[in-house]
Length: 554
Image 1 (cartoon, rainbow, N blue to C red):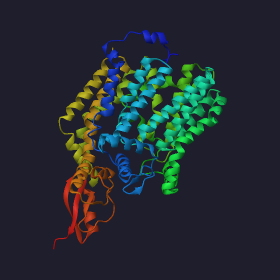
Image 2 (cartoon, rainbow, N blue to C red):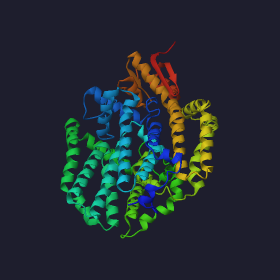
Image 3 (spheres, one colour):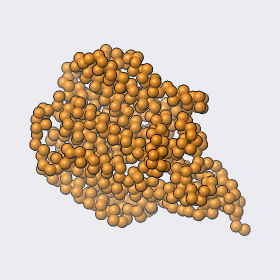
Image 4 (cartoon, one colour):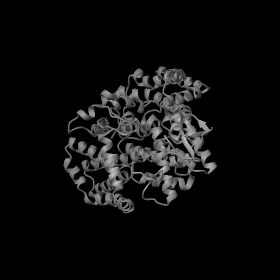
């Protein structure tokens, strides 16, 4: 079966390479370069970000320090945000590499690589090798994938298991349609339930809800609901699922009673969807605005072929195999997009659960003639924005009167006022040049733009931005660790500080003689709270202040 509409497998496999650029893009070397730029570059040097990376990493560190591999804590208090699998993965990595940024991030990098491998194999099974290579290259160069792949959080691991589950669901559909052996169907179902169980241990019900909902809609739309009912009521599969999920739940119940069940399933699942958490959400059009940024540099390419993609949804039950595959991929994306659009807690990386089918669809339609200007417009705008970034930051700094934002914007403005602006200008020029090179196919030009984007974003923009916002936290943590003194966090929440200090940092009103971590914009407030004592700063970088509580001078 051809994976690219309008072309036969033979014509694809025998088509000329199309020059040195196409040969490079279809070779393993382009994928290796993409992985190094998007997944690895700066992952070993950029400070851990707060709140998420710092919280996951500190919870793992505390878990290892206490010798309790069942119940994670954060600053000594139970942490019920996620199940256990990501903490186990980080603990294994840190045991080998030590408590470094790369040690905490390695599980995400490995998960992203396995996610790519699963995508490649799926495209091979249901298409051809060239499309598989393009799809994995699109995935690796998509902006948000690069961010998630190098972040010490659970989302790369979750995306891996969601994709493995849904790939197995579609494989089961094709096996049932083709009348393959019962043994093969059972094997696919057992794999599906195993991936559902591992996903559940990574992030809970969302890892099960999406595959079941997407699978239900797809099977019903094709008239294959009987095969789906057999899959849903396949009790050996549910035994596999329970064998993966139940043991840790029993252990965490023995360790802390029903606290995890109340905190995770009620607070961080049901309430997170129905209520706004940490100011993230909720607007019905949030993901309409976010999607163009998530898919850079391929946003315009998707918009250019969007009209052709609807055929997979319009086709009836007699649709061809290619149309059914596209229907499955579109249902996958639409379900995720709609579900989170109605959530009251919204974050950009939630949309990533539904982006893998878009990578496949883009690869399938790469040989069609797209509208060139529309395809390149978003990445050109990105390039122009980066060119103007120093001026934008300088203007924003001059107009901002909020102390914390003024400190951060001032630091960013100074950081980008150097030779990095030449790199960003070069990126913009090259992207415009690729857009104007009309003899270069659109998909090839966008792949090259993606490699350039990864180099500039993860080699320059990302390190500078995170260095300004988190560099002070890291330096303060390392300084406090050298001093060996206890530290109190007051009017600040930066879990990564505890990771770098290698010790829990309580949050309370400090007393005479204690070392304090606080925010520069809250220093006056802290001084009022400490009166008649006062805080004597010994370290200040960015918005971070480290000091000691002393007696007020007469």
